[in-house]
Image (cartoon, rainbow, N blue to C red; front, side, top):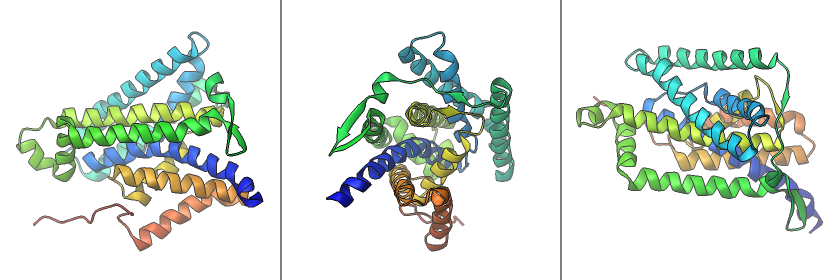
Length: 294
């Protein structure tokens, strides 16, 4: 019982962080599933959402600031797709990847200019900062809310993908981009909806993540973004359930390592896991084998 009580706070924190990584990872995996593009700017959109929230709360109530941040992040995601990715859709894959890296650095430099390179403190959201008791362990409300909200959002997303016309179109495009276009599917609409969903989830993840880790600087999106990317690869990039499972595994393992006194190696563990997965099962746990058409 003592052992359980000792590790429970770390497991709870791991589940919470895993949920936050999952919300970012879904954006990676959905964009890859449709466009076969690793959106390297996704983590920086997450960072920009945190930064905008900091400046908005000085003029607006917190609840209204959160809504505006979500709208801003969705608009930012759609703008990036329209300006940086759409014109290069028929270009070689390397061109669009370089464009994604360029957008990432562009967002980081905007944040650097606005903040002067200083770490800004994220506003406290009273409801999320409440202390609650779970199985005898004291933790913040955000720790409890995150996995519940993540699972609810993922369930809604899976229902959207499997039981709506736009979801059917998304599945068709992810299977065969060219044939879907020939069959009359509005490719631009499918892609913009994909970016709206990914950006929305990144904004929600930003509110939850920075409520726990309150410092926001131009590089704040890099490590969570990379870990979310690893989670997407771990689960099988292109698979929404895979991204979620991968994120929870990484979040829990990372926090257990911290509890074991191996904090220094907790980040390294994530990337060792990526190497192992790529060696053992390159398509990830839920990934499908690529079939080359002839």
